Image (cartoon, rainbow, N blue to C red; front, side, top):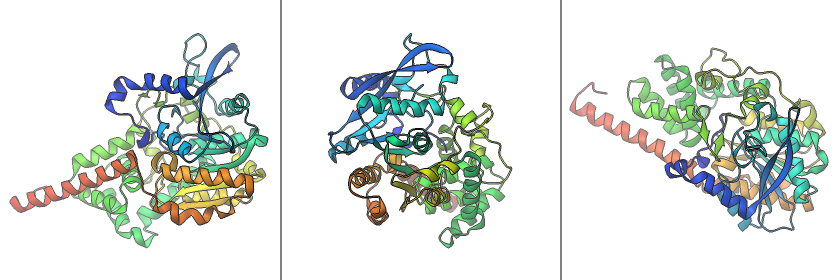
Length: 433
């Protein structure tokens, strides 16, 4: 469940100079601030920032990005513009400890112990109070789905409807489902359409390549570039070729869980307690191939898991509002079995599958996110979400735009060029790599 999306990755110029200026420009134009208690035994307060865009009049859509650590103001400018064009009233909160909500009234970083899921959930209620919004459609993506469900548990009267995009449910139970799903697809070859891919991945494992690298490669390549590219890259690397391409793609996967982050885009330092103590991102590896935890283990020391703040499987059965569960066909981080379990537990929930999509429509397929939000915002005033499943074929045909599409094409091109170069080398020097 690595946090950083490719669509939110800033340019090199933005890394040097742009994010802070952009954040404050957005805050001046669309931002609002709410005085909130820091907590943890102090009277100190901080300015919780949120942005609101689009015309009023419809049921607002409150969007909670993934992470933990993703900002809202700067990374999601484009999707707010797309939503406003479709007439959506969108509210996005800058998560406490991140970006415009990072510092207290004295200019100091919030203490890590004040950055917890329960406090964030109560922050959501505070911004709705400030905005004068009695109820909203709550859209959560990845980690944001945990916040959305937690908000439903603590503040049920404020939820008009819910969209769970690439959802989480239960830390340890989800992990077992993720492991089983990955291994069914890429070790056992249970899907006939992926039999060749599974054979190539097993070949890479048998070649003795590091398990954390294989996990990173499978996740990133399958999600963004697709099964054919994953098959080619795994097979070529098992034969000793495409080393540079392999390590470049592997580093992309590792960057999603490591590093200091980028201010006003993704800041992981103050949310480490949520990541590790509350959500178990660093749970131990099980020693078997394709373990998603091997990526976190390779990232270095981290705090131990203590407990999650909510027992969501036992609580979401009480949800009474319409719920849509959005699930990408290629999502290996929060895969389809997790989404299906939520649909089974939430009364009347509707599964909205999207062919060819990986993790998080909010980050990788924003036209899908906007269309589903638009449909749900209209549906809560007229009926439930029963008809949303019928949208799946149309959603799957929508063009992918932004960094996710660029990344997939870049990986495919690198693999293709590497294979062609290898073929030429073999013709000139038989046996060459």
